[in-house]
Image (cartoon, rainbow, N blue to C red; front, side, top):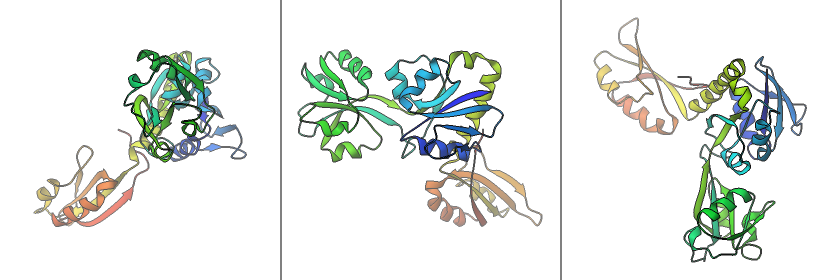
Length: 290
């Protein structure tokens, strides 16, 4: 039913892992094959292309929906329907930022401090031109084909580059003076496809599965027992997404289940044991669907 396009390059591994975890694994003849299949009746075909192109192709109706970044949607000015953000990126769950960076010893603290005629290199020339014009700076903006941060000071005075952690920019001796936009990975649909009830329902179902995986990441299921006398003391310190699930045990006391943040588990476990928890199990979660 649906023609799906997924991003090639830095997002490829994380995207394929997400679909695998959502029980929608992409099958290809090799890791360099640009076509694939998903054994699911909702998805007729899968293509893997550069994220720079995806929003344009979805707008044109070559695909029903696809995954790209908000940065490329804005750069290409594509008219697509957003089905929502997927909060993952190539290395972390944080968004990327499209930033303006200059040499570390520059006196500039914002784009407005840069002079007319400033030489700017970027893989996002249209976004860059609009941003500099908005701030009243006449910039000589040129398309960069990569290694953008290495072009200061000989080739450029300033670069507009994406960063997730800022590590590469700092390593190149640069400092960030402005942020143009913050971009999560995003699922976009062709307008006609999104208006088709059957296709939209299928796309929404796929989104439910993908978001279920992302919501489960970083969380675990805790199962434990507690006596009648310690129940209220335990519940007072036990975190949960909404409310813990409690059921009676055959020989008295209660069985309790709750979902908690994995990053805080080492603090939670000693505290709830002190509150009377026993027979504790920590289990991974595949999906969480509200």
